Length: 313
Image (cartoon, rainbow, N blue to C red; front, side, top):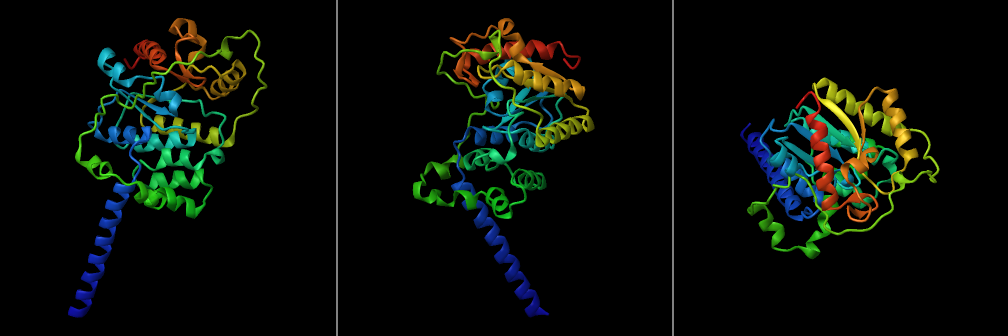
């Protein structure tokens, strides 16, 4: 019996030691300078149940909504919990993770990825979305859905050390001291873009020259249904919205609008209000799909007014 107990202790000690070493190495090698890495860490720094509004979605979302401005100037406590190239399936996963800590009155979901297929995400895009987040059952389920059950890929993104182990070739002291410093999360997930690019806004054209993209993808329908049900279960008002974008067309918008109307969902098409917002193709864009800082300031003022007019505020 003593021998059995002694051997059991050795096995347990080995397993614990392995887990600790694995976790430490993963922390050190984890890429720390993705926009989404800081967004996720900043979200976990928030006091629990401190948000009025949660924003989720891809880079179009966090380049459009200045949550720091909403919080400080309008008294609407909010956070941009997004990631570059985030599709709606992943937005649902981010919401699941977020609602473990927060119970906002409103969730606003940006739908630029409405026409994007799960299978089209590249390796770097999957990394932006999954590497920064904690390993949870919801993460595994989401990875299984997006990666179509590919076990090797699920392990790769579920345990980021397998994805980032080659970082030792470019390891710096900053990779260690990162965890010993206090990072500034005051932007509350917002990423401002100072560069300005003059663009032609297709939504303002009299004729829409773009061929309609077709019907609604099954994964889009499933993700929106899951998001809607999750919000209903938690007593949260969900608003789907489209940020201003030069490439977005009226035919794109009509497809989304028809789907939202059919399912009795709230859809805020910000491109319908470009003049009211004050968006100018010469001064307010970083590129064809993203607003620059000046444009985001205008859009944030508009969203603040929209939220103030809701019954929740």
